[in-house]
Amino acid sequence: MFKARTTTGLSILAAVAASTLLLGCSSSVEVKKSTPPTLSADKLSGTLSEKLAAATGQPKPHVSCPEDLVGKVGTTSRCTLTADDGSTLGVTVKVTSVSGGRIHYDFKADDKASPAPN
Image (cartoon, rainbow, N blue to C red; front, side):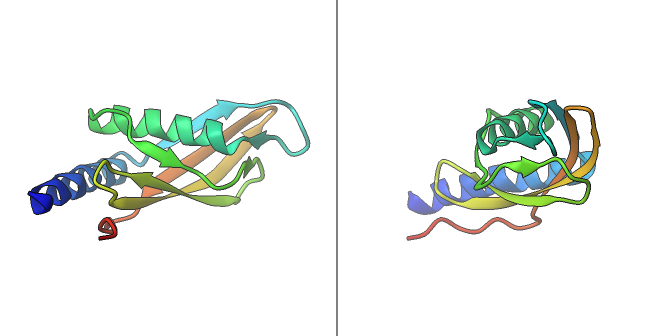
């Protein structure tokens, strides 16, 4: 029974990875004006979760980002998508442009998921 649950979680993560690769996902978010503008880790996590759900047609996955995203072109951040079974998939976020208080970024899921810890 445990193996079936793990397989399901990895299948969902594989679908997310495949969908983000095929779509070349990008997003932009309006943030409070500061110099440079910054997107909070919580807001980034929520936005990525929404975008990944829309791209895959699956429910919103749990995404966590460890740090705020600084609105400076070329800045990158690594977030983690966690499936219900505990398996994880890394998501890289890269700032592509900043206009006023809006941060534009691309994101890409890793090709392979990490299995859940035993």
